[in-house]
Image (cartoon, rainbow, N blue to C red):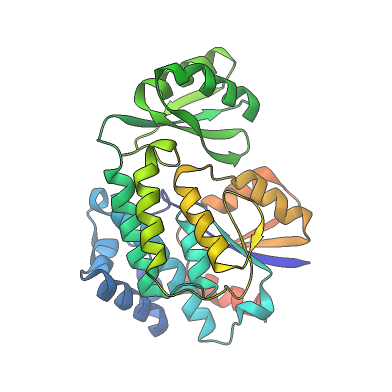
Length: 313
């Protein structure tokens, strides 16, 4: 009967995110101030006022999502919540892994904000706009999608980027190869093969320059062992050694986010409740599709914080 905290990834952002937390809790507002100071700009103003197209930019969305997650965590901690005694594991979807590690004490808020700004910029710069692509493949098993990627690889890089569960896989790579793989997947019986409106081919081998940049950036920040293990995206195993975690974060830039397996790992290791900490309810929805024995709970609003505190007391 264990509890895990999960942290959302890109796509969950929205204008107004975190404003109610900042208004309700001084500790939450302090997180947004700290992120603004670390980045040398008013990211919080962009988060709360928009415009949406600027907030959606990778270099903004990544630290913004982390800031909301940490605002909720700091508000809870100020009211007596102790992660080490209450939570068994943390995990995050892609950039959410950084939020998870910040929440577990491996990185400071300021360092996490700067790491995610670096990550966003490096991922965007790795491939010229228009040369990469991603597509969601709905309704096929992983081995069939993998075969489609391999068949299309004559046209360039193509690989599975995310296994989100519920029959949803995301492929990433060169535009021509991803387009071809999506066509092949449709022929193989996919319910849908949808090209995604993304600015770069995330979690593919084309992101190698960004992985190199993150290895350097991660080597320059202070690190502490997390107070609870993180279930890493690329290994689906509990990690507490900072060096092993850094290696997994570097590998994650070009590797697959194995989220379906992460949720199944939780279910197989006595986790019964998954709290999604931060903006949106995407991960809660995925959890319901992957394993109905798990209870997903969102911590997004001030009321959610109060409810979680009562339930975790």
